Image 1 (tube, rainbow, N blue to C red):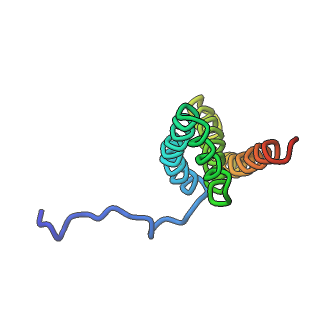
Image 2: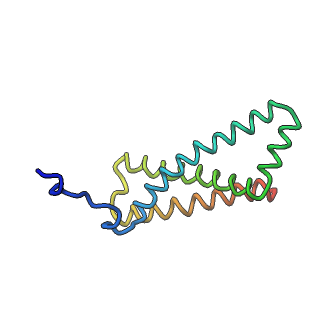
Image 3: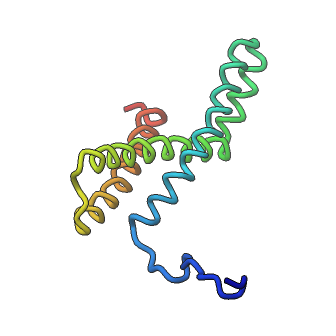
Length: 128
C-alpha cells in the first residue's frame, strides 16, 4: 500500500463534543495539575521546616490574589479528580453506561466538584 493510500483516523473535528469527552480530557489535565500542585505543597512544607522568615514569605505568596487563584484551581482539581474517579469506579462495577446516565453523572461530577471547592474556601476563609 502506498503512503498516500493509507486510511486516516478521524480526529476531533469529526466528532461532536460531548460531556464524557470533555470530562475525559479534563480528568487527565487535572491529574497533571495535581502533580504540579504537589510541588506547591512541597514548597510549603520545606518553608515550614526552613524557619519563620521563609515560611512567612511563602505564606505571603500563597496568600496573594494570584496565590489564592492557584490554590482555588488546585482545590477544584483535587475535588474534580476525586469525583470523576468515583464515577469511573461505578463504571468499573458495570453501572451507569446508558447515555442519559453518563451525561447526568458527568454534570453531577462538575456540580459537586464546584460546590465542594466553594465550600472548602468558604470554610477556610469565611470561618464557617
